[in-house]
Image: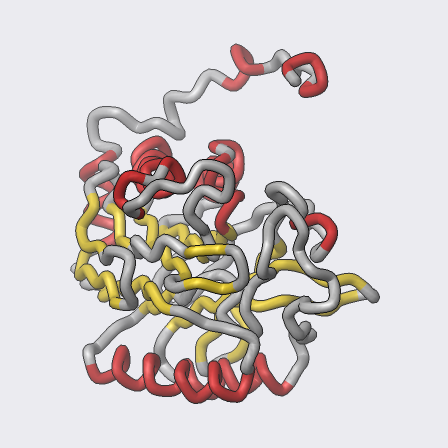
Length: 283
């Protein structure tokens, strides 16, 4: 059975696009030498994230790029035979989106606009409105962008659309309201790891989670990139510093094994979930 070598990157990326593209070239070339088939980069890789979640600093927004831009064409060229997922700020119809694109040397395979927005992110970006999987050289993939991970419906929608691998691209910081002295003790650190494992296990899919590291503005990013198997087992991970989480696995065989006795998607009872309460009633 075919083995897929999956990598998820923990690294720091800021505003300097030229520097980022040079850094990406080095990361991708190293991944190619290591034989990676799929490489997932963090959210906001190209152009960086916003400096403050509560007061995003509208005079310091990341540069934006269309899907037809030279930047995306450069990503296609860099990818070559590899499947590459990268976060960026997308410009479309006069709006800006926190977005991710998945490419190979054949072109753009799929892309996603972040749907769920924490704190003041809506001041800096428009929200996306859908989740859809797409075919790639490494199988059917779905994309999530950081806070999307918090909502089980997002990953479940991708799994129901046939995603075998979910690539989660994050610029996920430590808590901005209750900072811990050590990142390992931070509430957001625990939640980030929990969501990664839960989204993989509840949908019985492979999840590759990449995240930013270091500090930008008032935000301190967690790192903690990982590859998670369809049983929720962490196959490889990084910590708070820049590094690559890498795992080799037969994706189809692992998913089949996970679903052999308990098949979560097939055993759902949608009719029992029909009630849609008013979210305002729970605030």
